[in-house]
Amino acid sequence: MTISEKVAYLKGLAEGLNLDVDKSKEGKLISVMIGILEEIGLSIEDLEENALALGEEIDVLSDDLADVESVVFDEDEDDGDYFEVECPNCEEPILIDDEALAAGEVQCPNCETRFALDLSDDTVDADEDAE
Image (cartoon, rainbow, N blue to C red; front, side, top):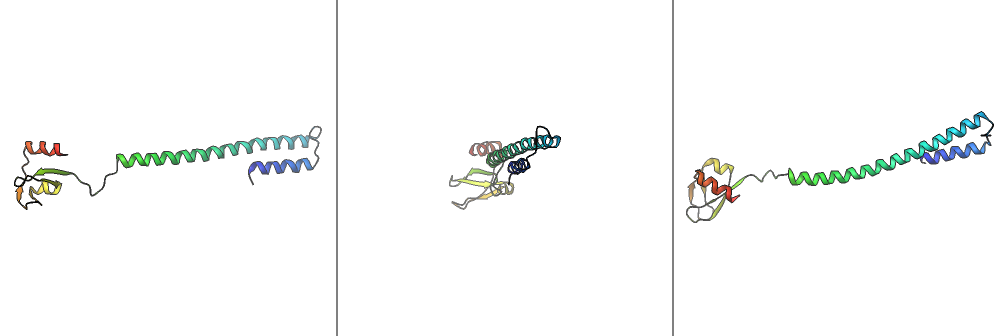
């Protein structure tokens, strides 16, 4: 039972008592209190409706924010930085990671030639263009 329904029940009980709301001080008091309770009940119901609507809006905004966060911040842990270099023997492009870059030597998976990485400025510029 909602608050408004309870107040309506209370109002019906008061009317069933046949209180004289015009001449009796007690009747006037009870009538005014029931009127105030009706207003409070309606205000509470409005607040509850607004709270539900706001909760739904917050859920929508939270979902939208989660989508934005996934685009902006999510990176796969396995998805590290890779650099593309060209095999000096077969000229095939090779993707190398930070670990191979630190080792300074790579083996081409195509022709199996091992070669040292040239970390000169020309190679770095070429690597940055490849990204």
